[in-house]
Image (tube, rainbow, N blue to C red; front, side, top):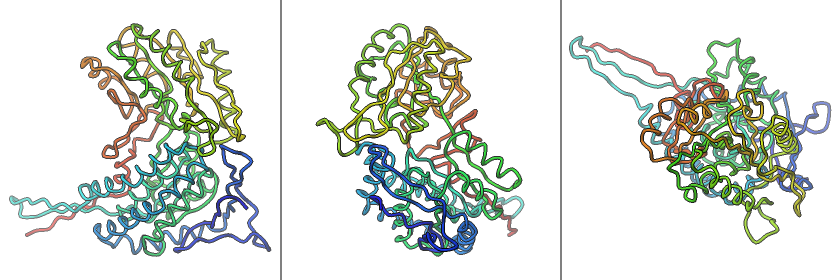
Length: 494
């Protein structure tokens, strides 16, 4: 037995644990250990491919009733869900800390944002999908625009924000009148179970809420079902590509892909280094760099290069990395572990790659030993005098606490650095120079361009857009709702 108990897949308004003995016994299991203490088993979850038909049937049954409800009735139940999340806030924080290794301060922020964002999504739905009437007095008719749900929506969620991301997408799909099937990351099943339990207690009709446990194979199989019309995916480009292949035979399949990032923070010559250090540290190393919005490249103006490197290096060495609860020092850690052993191996592999590519190492990334044996690594800093266009290290998403500093003199060089990768998620500029801001807004090819705000900062009132290989032009955030409904025009003579 582990620290947490997994109740199985959720469909037809109840959890269903597959049999573990007998002729129909489940023979596929996911065993989860705590990344901050690998000697602690958190849970063991059965994976049942035999449940997929029943889960899809449940979602189809759910939308048949849920799509007929008014927006006001949907909002009332979602408000109850919001209240249920507030009641289990501490349980959610504990689950996030143990499952993905986030420090307690970070998990607390995530849960608070999850709860607060529900009100933002509701307000947006009221403005966005409430029916609108347009009169044409010349031709004596009136037209209405109403918004209908697209159908059952599959949500495939990552581990980095195991509460905020699935909850936001579930709420967006539900506001649009859709039923949902959540397939959480294999790393955060228990956190998702808590979310599903809160939705259950809120009182949704039978079949509206569903959850399936499994890996990539489960996701690929579900995408192929003709009954599933919408797919909301956040994750790697590789997995996103597989989903595209799986869905390619269905032209009516709405596929929203939010993929990888390799984000740049530009520090212009008018920066006060002391005032921006905290923001850059946070954007590089919060969540142990395992955030697709994390800063991976710092483009620094040569006028402030030496001062910034000295101070940034010193602050990076002071970062506390440890267990979310049972930490050794008197200070709560800023960073927790990486998610698993493979993430550590990948991180160290890229550290070696940088050396082979001739990129200077300012602070070496290495595996760390702590009182609790976990997947701990130190932050790392690299430096190159100029952009290396063919560098695999500079062009790859590493999802670890690493940043590479590249100096520039002219604005065009900074723009070129920000646009140098195949990804187009986020860029930040720290500068009050209006001309520099205007150039960045005009010429940088990313979905978010922030001024004096870190790449990791999101405002829930804004859509999350991305370009190039970071998406298929579907937006996240409040923009998720737009992917979950379609407009219906109705003209009436009077």
